[in-house]
Length: 292
Length: 279
Image (cartoon, rainbow over all chains, first blue to last red; front, side, top):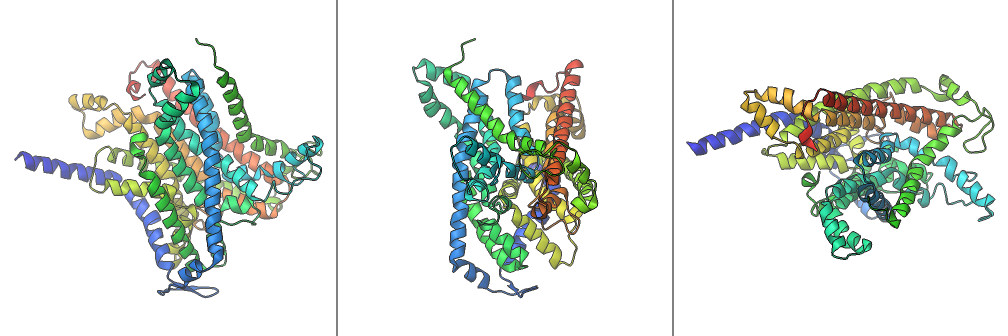
């Protein structure tokens, strides 16, 4: 009898779980799983100049994997992701560390944290546009540098270059590092730090041997966000490079603009596999649900 | 209190620079949007005027921005309500293990990390191949949910990780039905976090670009309209629009923060002990 009632209870909790999760499941099935399947299917289709037709061709992949453009763009995508990751990590960690360990009252911590969060809730496109007056040929950066006598000619590489792309990424996404790192730091037991100081550690030693190891889960979550966002981006690269640089997202978008959906889908499949492998690897180092 | 270590001052300076970096560009376009009628996209200011804001009300200068604004607003509210409801239900579901909960969890993570353009492309393809017309209120709405729901759910997971279950037990011991426990105990305790979920739902939708790109059809949302303008508008009217929509976002954030503040204050005034366990 008892085993029966336990299994009955299990069934019951499964039912409630499913009932409660069903709207979520429905949304994800229709707008996440089905689109992925569709992309995989269409990546084997053929295309004429104006239409696409069902088929089972490897042409799209063959073309993609035999062209050096693909490899260069692929490498470029990783380059953007890596540099952005390093910058956001250094800045994000420093900001979170300051908020968590140097601000002494909770009210101020919340206030300053909100100050960091608010830009995230405004438009990314506007935030990108807002770099134009700074970085342009006659922009604030160039005119300041010229009037200070540092340079004589305006710098051409400030806007529409790899520099401006990465600057925009860092500007847009550093917050995704600050939030999880700050969250993890706030949960560090302060007595551990006291113990480390009492045991004679210098500030740097405490930081390196106590705080950083304990902050790793937050760093991992931040990394997942930043890597996923930068790898999947196309709009920042297009806008901030003035269409002069490319990443995988740009390749996809170009194909879409030319109505070459099968070829866009093949690139999308490769990009998705890459991102999922990367994120899957990162997830092995952190239990997201426990860290929230 | 101990005196501040030297590092505090370096870090304060660093933090200050970070804030300047975050807000500086936005403030600059805020100032430049008051350019005189002859002014360009950067300094110097050629006079101060409301010329470019006035232009926003003229169809020829900017196209249908007010139409796209109202679409974005309605879509934002739709996404907000759906995100809150689905996230609460999902959050409650994940408090207990159920068959498939792990798979569902990884789907949520996938929904968060998947390159946005894939959602746009996939949903667009499904709609076009089934002969439907993409529309912001159907395909666009669903595509945006794949972006807002993971955030809502992650917030709910965080909330329920810190939730003190003894309140629920107390309610059940007093004879409350499961629905009553949710309605009169759980929901009031998590209310401030729900306001956070609503804020995320609205603002993420209102500013969403990549997932809406191929799924909104011929009627643009505001971010799409703004992006379209970047390719052919080279006057400060772009900055005026940017300023206006940023001010709107800030006002929305302010309203939400005030609601949280008000809810908390009311709670404290009424002397209820609800919520004391959720820090």
